[in-house]
Each structure stands twice: as structure tokens, then as C-alpha cells.
Length: 238
View 1 (cartoon, one colour):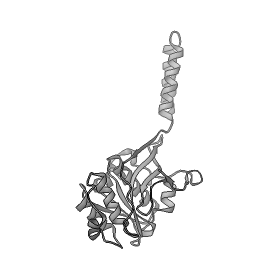
View 2 (cartoon, rainbow, N blue to C red):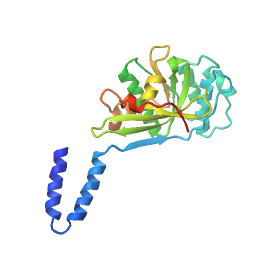
View 3 (cartoon, rainbow, N blue to C red):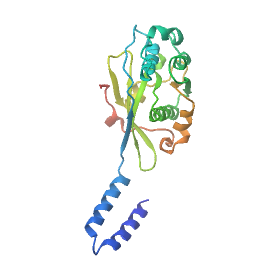
View 4 (cartoon, rainbow, N blue to C red):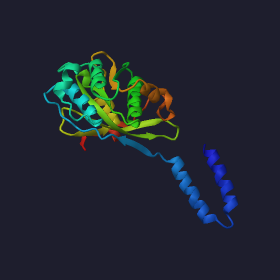
């Protein structure tokens, strides 16, 4: 790739050196800046933050936030809870809640307990966000759920994506959280009691989009993260 740039530079310099050297070099400098530097991308959905009605009602609250995001602001957690479960909800009951109370069909996606599989799960969530759809993650060893509302990521020069930041609504908190992807991976998103990483998507197509369908999400070994000493941050209020 660098060889191509150098060849282009030489041809461009020879052509413009007599009359247009200064503007030609300026154009080339801008071109190199665009091609060689990593430009972060992001997308955040305007999912309203709603706290749980009762302690432990994280699943009904997550489904309610999803439904309200799509315009069904009349729905209450009391209506949703019989489907998701008042307490002890599973990835399957939450998926049923998404199917029944939102405009989407809930799909339970499970990933094995490996770093690559965890990275693949994050990759599918980025694909979902890019399509304007949130997802629900089972966190804290399977004892809690949050709704993921946005990501910032960087597509590196070799085409590998790096998830930089994650934004989510936690029903147990009074506001949204934005944390580094490293912090998300190492302090929030763990295998549940099933021994697998669990998320609720709106379509199995995001599995393909995230893992195979779009080149920007085809990381070697899954989406990887930056230096933990640099990236790790505490949750911040948004």
C-alpha cells in the first residue's frame, strides 16, 4: 500500500512541479491524512433511560426502554413482567418480551466462553446499532441485563475494527453509562450461568452482518480492544 502512495506521489510531483507545485502538494497531504489516519466512527441511539420499578426488574425495564424507543410509550413494566419474568429472567424470556412488545422479533444469541466468541458478540451488537436497533446484554455473570444503545469504533488501516466505547442504559442506575470497550469486556460482559455470553438481538441476520457479512466487522479473531491501561475508564454520566 505504501509503495502505491509513493508511486502516486512521484507521478503527481512530476506533473505539477512547474506550475502547480504548492496546491499539488497540499492536495497530496490531505489525501495522505485521509488514507493513513484512523478516523473513529460512532452511532448512538436515542433510547430513553428508564429505571426499574422494583429492584431486580431489569428485564422488564430493558424491554420497556426498547418499546418506548420505537414509540410505544404507553407500555408499563407491569404489563411486560409476566412475559419476561418478574425476577430470574433468561435470555429466552427477554427475547419473547422483545417479540411481544416491540416492532422486532427477539432472537437469543449465545456465544461460547472464549475471547474470540465474546468479541464476535460485541461485533454483532455494533452491526445492530449501525442498523438503528438496540440489543440487550446479559451481564454480571447472568444476574443482570442492560440495553446497549451505541458504540464508537475505529476501523484500522488493515480493515480490522476496534471497539472503543460502549453506551448502554442500566435499569439499576439513574442515568446512561458510557464506558471503554475494554472496561465493558473485562468488568461487565461475562458468561452467564449457562457458561456462555448471551445477548438479545432483533434478527439473526446481525450475526452474519457482524461476523461475516460486512468487511468492517471482520476482525481477525473478532473485534479486539486497545491498551487496557489507556482505555479503561469508569462509567460516566451522559
